[in-house]
Image (cartoon, rainbow, N blue to C red):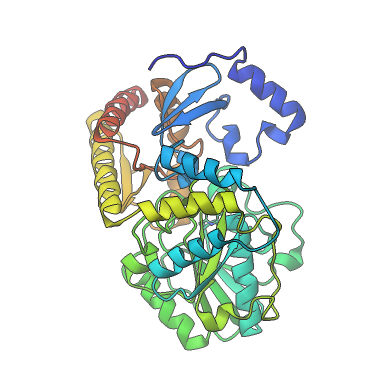
Length: 427
Ligand SMILES: *Cc1c(COP(=O)(O)O)cnc(C)c1O
């Protein structure tokens, strides 16, 4: 790759500067490379499947903002819509047509989801969905699954996946006992015992924050039937899976319909966004027509709406076939790379989501994921790949996000690099 704009900064200098004014030098913990070692690279720009850092080095990128840019970086259709929207004003504190259009696009595509409320992050979406479920059922207790991540709100930051998992923090300081007293944590892929004391069960229908862990056949079906038996609101947190696995989200592919959904990432086209939605009867409990309060100065932000409308309009059944076939090519290649080097690893895939677990056995829950991570191979694999020019997420519990900007050529290069990285790992 030709060197891009070369700044006077090295990544190391920038990180030192950042650490003086930003805790840990980052605005989201996983970015700090704590669990893989080394200094994070500072991104100067992104284009398609590639990132370019401040030193001019390029990376074939599989972080893709944790799945938020499904079309790749700086896709011209997205940047045009953002530029166009910005000309007319960036925020009003009043409703706009663009909010209606994006809400319609979501509701049209997700069967059973009658209404949505737009937020500025997935955290807000999950937090508000829980509040709504509690308001609707007039019950307090909620259940989440170990290793699933639903953002960083107090009640949901227990048994968390993603960055919380890779930092080895079981929960966080600063959360009062009372805030999590009503949160029960259960192992993923087993239908937990439930009763009439629960307001909601929240789950990632395909878990993608403890590595990639698909639902076992019958798990989500069992959960849905137990929830309906006891009048519990079933919430699918589709912040990663929504509009990544198919036009109707994971619920459509898996054939299980929850009561509420959370969305984020993909639906903002790379702009800050979140959404929660579901059955009209439940959603109409939201203020201003109901008693459950939730709000946001920048909610339904017109620039985020413009990017979201563009991306959802572009994604069709063909896009998802393409994504899944690229992901399959990548996962098959990675499997061959590890086995050629004699390294025991499981490449787990669901549709377009891919995850690597080192070790001899496939992973079905967080305890097994932690066992795999404790083998300690991910940091070295990550570092070798980065050295070869492939940016994987700097944490062993994150997944790989092949996107529409990764062509077969890029996938095949990635596999070649993985072969080399696996050989180095085996030494
Ligand atoms: C990323 C994520 C969130 C949080 O979304 P933010 O926009 O980072 O607040 C919630 N749930 C899941 C499943 C996620 O992957």
